[in-house]
Image (cartoon, rainbow, N blue to C red; front, side, top):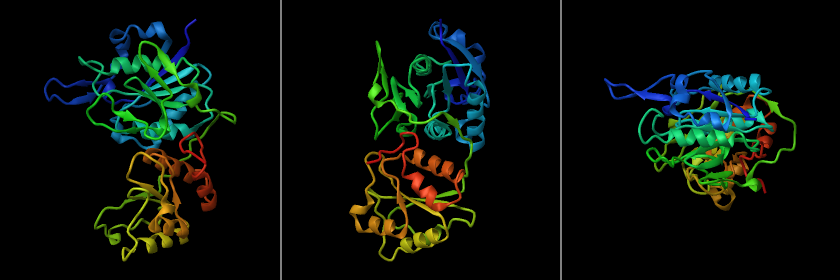
Length: 331
C-alpha cells in the first residue's frame, strides 16, 4: 500500500512558466496538471496537493511561515510525509524556520525547488520532485532540503550558487542522504529526538543586521527602539575593528538596553571562535554571544523564533547557544 504524501506548493521557479511575450518567468498553478508532467509520481506515493499561497519567494514573510506550518498542522494525522516546493532564494530560511516551528517531528518534511521550471527542457525540477517525494516516504524525521541528488539538514543548508543545478550546500554538516541509482540514507546523520512533537508559531522579527567591511562607519547604523536583537557580521573567526571604531561602545550600549547581540562571520564554512582574537574576546566580555557554526539563515530565524517566545534576555541567550533542532554543533 502506497504511503500518503502531501505536496505543498508555495510558488517559485519550479512551478513557473515562461511568458511568451516578455520571456520572463511568472508564477502559475502548474501543479493542476502535475501528473501530466511526471506521471511516475503516482508509483511512489499517493499524493495530494495543497497550495496555501503562491509567491515569488523573495516576498516571504513570517506570516507565510505561519500559514505553511498551519497547513502541516491540520494534515499531520493524514499523511506520512510532506514535500514543500519553494522558490530557491529563501528556501533555506523557510527550512530553518520550520525546523524550530516543528519541534521533534515524527515524519519527514522535505523542501525542494528548481533552477529551471518543470515546463522547460533540461529542467532540474523533475528529478528534484521525484527524489523529494521518494525520500518523504522514508524514516527521516526532520526538516530537510533535497536539491540536485543531495538531502541536507534544512537548518544547515545555504544557497551557494545562482546558476548551477547544484545550487545548495551544507558547509558544516554531512549529507542526510544521496540519490543515484540507489538512495543512500546516512542514518548516523539523521536527527535523534529526545522529546514529544510540538508545533510553535511565535516569531518576532525585531532584528537588525550590521555587516562589517573595511571603512565601516558605526554612525551609519543605529537600530530603532523597537529592535530587540542585533546580528553583527564580522570577518573570519568573528573579528571586527575595535580601535577608534566605536563598535564596542555601541555593543555595550545595546546589551545594556536588553538587546541580544549575536556575533557571526561572513565566512560560510567552519566554526566561529571569536575568543581567539582580542576584538572577538572583547565583544564576548561585553555580553555578545557567538553563533558557533550556524548558517546565517539558521541564526536569524532562530533569533526571531526565540524573541517570539521569550522576553527575558538571559533565557534568549541561553537557548540561542543550545541545539534546538540540530542547527549548531554543541561541544
